[in-house]
Length: 103
Image (cartoon, rainbow, N blue to C red; front, side, top):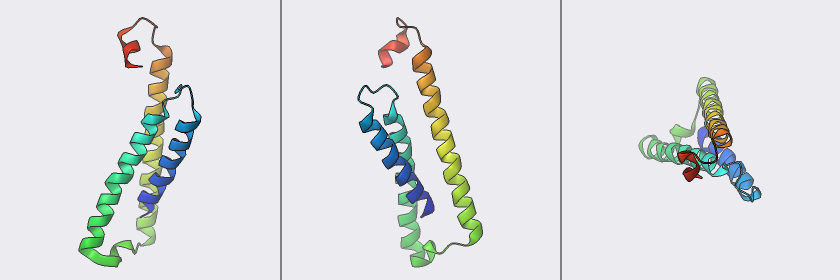
């Protein structure tokens, strides 16, 4: 449950930033895809856990909470690193390169 909520918050934040970036200069859509994709994956996992185990699937030990927080943080950091790499790549490419067609 923590994973789903964390990625929902990150996805909503990325969506707000996407809407605020009128020039599409920072490619926030990539962040939206990453966060909403991970949220969808963990939501499906949560639904199947609830179907199999019932409400006991929501009960978490302190170790599980810490593991979920670590996983959420690592996904957030990896998504931001990939997004930063994408922005750096598109900023540093020459104007006439084949990568310019990707814009």
